[in-house]
Image (cartoon, rainbow, N blue to C red; front, side, top):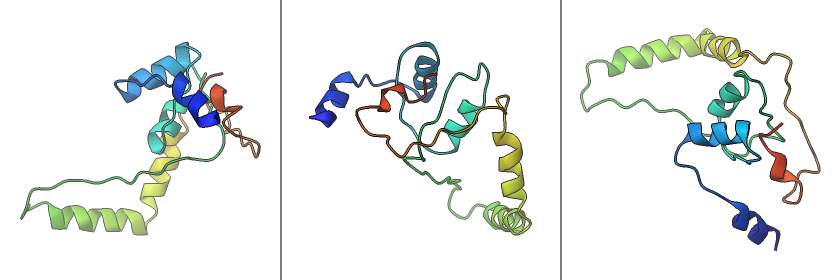
Length: 121
């Protein structure tokens, strides 16, 4: 019954930006995961809130054509950045954003009955 109620209230968006805009401006719940949520959450006007733990995790991929002359150089550069922790440093630096005072709200009682406020403050 709870899933049916949530499904009835779902209103799909055509793009990520539309989802974030509606969450910022309307009483709209937007479900998404990964780094983009953290990044968007830290942009002004600082009125989004992440509730609970990350629901989804997506990796990143870079596509190269077959026999690309750049693949070996790219792989070596990524390995070097990873070994020096530069990727983590870049992430920490760029994920702070403009909303430094905001924190993620953790909730052990998050369920379908009280999740309607996700991403809207």
